[in-house]
Length: 71
Image: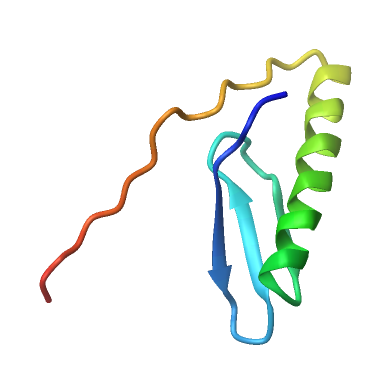
C-alpha cells in the first residue's frame, strides 16, 4: 500500500481535492472527511484504469512542504 499526498481546497460550498502524483485524479466532498474518503476511492479507480491501459503508476512524492511569504 502506498500513500499519496493530496491537496484539499475549500471551494466555498464544498471541498475539492487532487493528487500531486496522479494527473487528472480529482474529487469533491461536502466535508473534509468526505473528500478524503472520496479521494481514496478515486485513487484506487484511477490506478486500476492506468494499469489496465498499460500505463506506469507514478511513485508518490516523498516530500511536501509549505512556505511563509510576507505580503
